[in-house]
Image 1 (cartoon, rainbow, N blue to C red):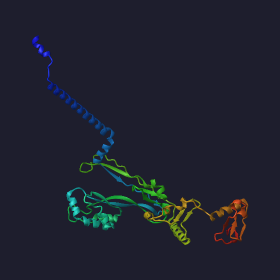
Image 2 (cartoon, rainbow, N blue to C red; image 1 turned 60 degrees about the vertical axis):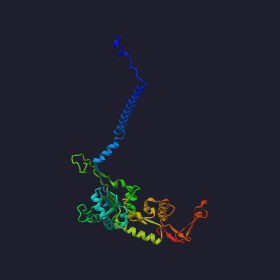
Image 3 (cartoon, helix red, strand yellow; image 1 turned 90 degrees about the horizontal axis):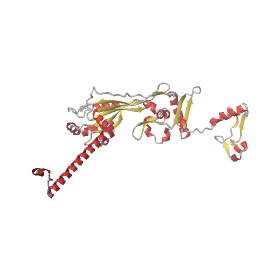
Length: 390
C-alpha cells in the first residue's frame, strides 16, 4: 500500500506555478463574463429590433420593395343657378429636374447644361438665374416650377436639347408630376360668395371664405393611394398583393345665384360706391317667396384666381353676412307699420316738417335726451309729407 501513497498525496506547486494558475482562472472568468455580456447585449438588441422598434424596421423594409403612389381627388364643381361653372379644378403639372447617378447620363446632361437652363427658363418665362441656381453639380431631383399648364408641359416634353444622343431623348432631364389647380372662369363674379382655395403654412390646400371655405371638406373629397411591390430593379411584381384605395371626388354644389343679375348688380354697386366715395357697399337680392338668394354682391371685390394680390384682408369678407348691418331709413316702414297697427296714426296721416330737425327732449321729455337732436339727411325741412312720401 505504501507504494500507492503517492497517488493520494497533494501535488505541491511552486509560487510561480500558483501565480500562473490564478491568472489563468481570472482570464477564464473574464472571458466567461465577456461572452455572457455579449450574449445579453445581442438578446437586448434583438428584443429592441423585433419588439420595440418592429414597426419602424418593417416600414424601412417595405420602402425597399413597395411603391406608393398618391392619386389626387378632383374637387367638386360649383355651379350657378343656370348651370354656369363658377369654380372647377384644372389639371396642371409640377416640373422637376431629374437625373440619375449614371455617369454617362450626367456627363451628357452637363455637357449641354447651359442650353438646358436657357431653354427651360425660356419656355417657363422665368429669369435664367432662377433655374441656374437650382441645377447644382451634384443635384439628383429638384423642383423647377409648380402649376404649369398643358401647353408648357407639351413644349418641354418635345424640345430636344440633346439631339442625336442615344440617352438624350426629348424630355431628358425633366420629370412631371400631375396636380390640380382651382380655377374661377368668371373672374370676380360672385367672388365673396365663392371664396377661394388658398394654402396653409405647410403648402397644403385650404378653402378660405365663402362656399370654398365653409364646405371645404365636402368639396375636396378624399385622395387615393396605390401600393405595388417591386423587385430590386424597380419592376412591378405582378403576383404580389395589390392594395389600391380609389380616390373619391368632392361634391358638386349648385348655387341660387343668377350670373346675369349678379353681373349687373356688381356693375351698378361699383358705380354707386365710387360715385359716393364710400368705403364699401353690399347688395342682396332675394326671392321673398322661397328665400333664394338671386344675387349677393360686395364692393370692393377681388379675383379669386389671384387672391394673393389683395393687400387688405377685410376685402375677402362677405360684408353682406359677416358684418353687423347698421340700418337707418330701412327701419321707417317697420316704425310706420307699428304706428298704424297700434292706432297711433291713421293711414291719411301727414307730417309737416318745418325745421329739418327734431328735438328729442321736446318730443319725449326724457331727461337723458336734453340737447340732442336728429336731422334730415340734408338738414333741410321736408315740408308736408304723406306716409307714402316719407
